[in-house]
Amino acid sequence: MLVETQDLWNNFLVNIKNEISSVSYSAWFNDLKLISIEENSLVVQVPMEIHKKILGDTYYSLIEETLFKLTGINYDITFLLEEEIEPKPEEIEKSSLKVEEEEKKDEIWVSNLKPELNFDTFIVGETNQLAKVGGMAVAEAPGKLYNPLFIYGKSGIGKTHLMQAIGNFIATHTDKKVLYTTCDMFMNDYIGIVGKEKGKESIDYSNNFRNKYRNVDVLIIDDIQFLVGAEKSQEEFFHTFQALHQANKQIIISSDKSPNDLKKIEERLKSRFLLGLSVNIDPPEFDLRCRILKQKLKGMSIENMVEDEVIEFIANNCQNDVRFLEGTLRRLMAYTAMVVPEKIDLAFANEALKDYLNVNIYSENTIENIQQVVADYYHITVEDLKGKKRSNAIAIPRQIGMYLSRMLTEETFPRIGFEFGGKDHSTVIHAYEKINKDLKTNKKLQQEINEIKNKL
Image 1 (cartoon, helix red, strand yellow):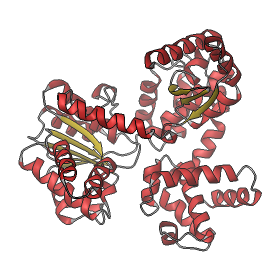
Image 2 (cartoon, rainbow, N blue to C red; image 1 turned 45 degrees about the vertical axis):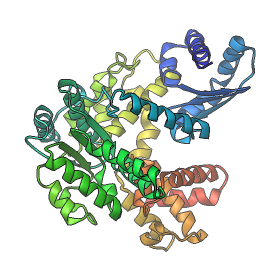
Image 3 (cartoon, rainbow, N blue to C red; image 1 turned 60 degrees about the vertical axis):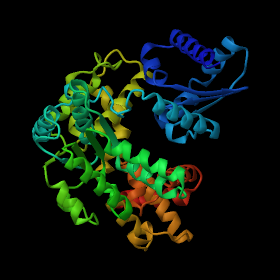
Image 4 (cartoon, one colour; image 1 turned 90 degrees about the vertical axis):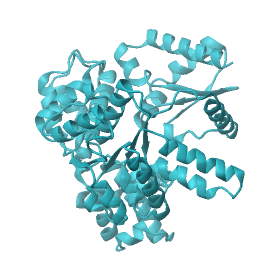
């Protein structure tokens, strides 16, 4: 049945490709993923919020008609982002059984590495040269030179790319077992132990946890700053660190702050972070931004349409981080798919990106800045926004703060939740969607948010 479903989806994409331009197909259909087909309901995963609007407003009839030609069924089609898709209970159970079977068969180790994040695609400039050199040294002699390697800098400037590049180099050139994980994943796994009742199941889970994180040659852990305030998780990570370090296993860590600036992290952990090499990555300079843009354009449908002056225009207006550069290119490609110009010159780019760049002027704001301005506007404190009080006088400003943090920065839902007192990412998603929905009809809310933006 699964094969038949995938065949249907592949045939659907072939038919769509024949109906629209290659640029439009690349922009709106190339990254779609079929999630489920049940009776007359069909769920499709999309990469960005804008895909929901374009597919729903512009291409829905074409999608519906194409599916009807292939199946004779009028499907109700739903477009969802990855974070909006929740696995069904039976799928979770099947997934657990599959994991158990794979463990029993001792199949290939899952390192969580992405092959495309390698040294060849990591563009080097003045702001990240030392980090690259340190990373290469570790990759060529894991566990021998700089252990741990601690990489720090603001969000979205290439820390994860460099860490994954090191991991991929080691995995390709040695038989060492490499594991990339995030601090959030580590804590969730540890909380799983704590949540188990005493007994054989608890012992098995605990053993699996230790095997996962201590039975490796290279442990790469991203965003270690999320350990702040999690005392039990800090203690477990300390013991994991000790076990690996004493066995000369390589440890690679990233953070948004240097080891000395990590507040509320145990001193014994901070002292161990300083045992090896700490390197900083700064936001990319102009020349590096231009080269990154050219690298990101490779393989995109608009690669040969973009003039050099457009590259410089984007580089001048996007001075924050690499993610913002990528987002700008995606916006440019989406606009190109709708207008279909012969070339992308400066005038076209300026028109395509004017609203996006104007909105993202605010991206230099930090979550902390937004929290302070929102708190001042509603005559409450930042501590109120981070706290647990649920009265409307605090809950609504808190939701507005989360919404603006998502809109005006490049931070992720988990990161925003962390800054708002350790809230779960689902809470941030709910706040974002609620405010976004209310803005369509609530003029008072529109006025308040515009006034807050002006203050920012």
